[in-house]
Image (cartoon, rainbow, N blue to C red):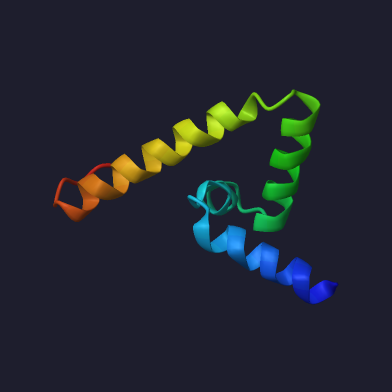
Length: 74
């Protein structure tokens, strides 16, 4: 059972947008704690933080695009 849980965790971590990791680095918190908070808040508020997650993922994608193309942007 633990192997199945580990495989699911690895599957989602490989395909995630990196939003939780980015936030954990910015606020100097463990990534697992940020993910847990996001999950709990999503469940309690009926999924509205998913919009925040998608907007942040889009922002990070745009930011990395500009960095790759030589535009300095922080």
